Length: 430
Image (cartoon, rainbow, N blue to C red; front, top):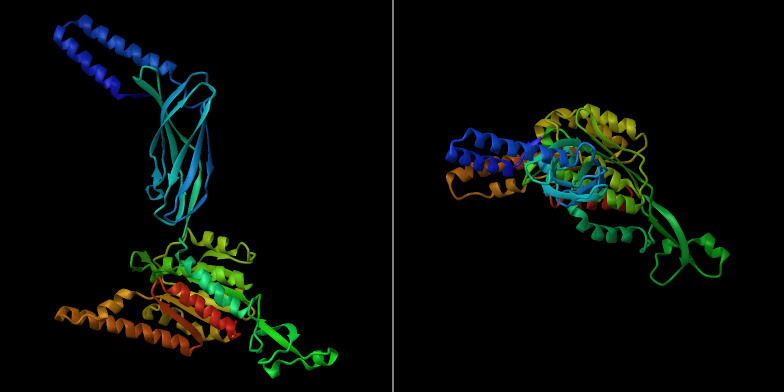
């Protein structure tokens, strides 16, 4: 049971009347009338526990976009429902409105729509629905909280989507609209066509020419159906914030662009996210659904404050990919972390697979390195220069052991990683 503000106002007015007349009879009369009104309201209010509540609507939404969840309320009783409804969600879900009025005739139904604009990745789970059913006098109400389960997953934003048309245009130059007349490593035979002036004579197919009246040349295209394994580091080194977001978020954006591009290129992509243990895995998903599967798997991930296990990562890659493939490792070029965990295993991975390492650089370090105005800025610039030098040394060490390294700020990492993939594909090194 819940009392309303109207009840408090009437009780205050009654108290003033009693004090004015100083009569016990008046006190009994006022209290009796108020109590009777409360009882009448409780008897005539629609029962809350008999209401039928169901949900429908969106289950996934990109971060900072809006999803709509609809709550349907059915009133099986014969009494009209006059109620206030509160649909409770976590604060990070950005639910609006927080409360809504509901008016239903007996046997009727209504819908209440809640807009969710999440501010954090992951799952937003509905808590409880609280309904306060008031009587006709507005003095008292029946109240109950009911669990109505629903889950909305906030997916990582795909900000690098704007780079996809450009990368697809480059991909078409490799495979599709523009066929290559020159055979390179990693190219496969496509078709024969008639020779025209300017074609490379080394592409002439002499056997085909002997069977036809015109000179024929071979055309080639980059190999398709290559395999890509993305290893996403979720350890402490990617928990550091660059700008307004952790390094992990920028890495996820790069993974999405690479996944979309690889699917259009006809290559197969798998994802493993791990630090000391596997946090997420997407394996064997068809190319048409791999982007959605990878995005969904990354949504609930957060950087764990543990040191990543380089030996476990290498063992996972070797166990998962027994044939040569492109291994894309997204981590941070932190010398202290990589020297003990990853560097000892890079040579082995690079000997069996093509290894591509992507890392999120902090543009603030470059800004600090340029400071020269006063003594404090000079010391800060020296520290920044040292940090840049250590990062460059780690990248050079990875390259000496056979890896290709892409180190770029958050907004430039996705296209730079995609460019590296296309370059490796064009060179036939996948």
